[in-house]
Length: 104
Image (tube, rainbow, N blue to C red):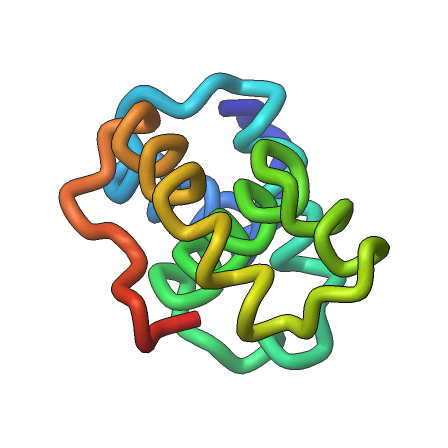
């Protein structure tokens, strides 16, 4: 973690390390940037911002989700069919929690 980070940036990065102890630095930076750039996460707790940003990042970066949307699947179907791959990524990062079938 870079010592010159702003407080919110630092707090989200610390939350990521607690939630995902095996997360690589390059993924951490991308997830923190995603959280900081999200209007919907501006008032979220650092833990909520870290979790939601990590799930979105993993879904878009490490599953076929975007390709499925391009192929005409609706969001719900694409999320259903990529759920196992998404949770595999989260587990690989050391997460103790995964995304359930009815959770975003």
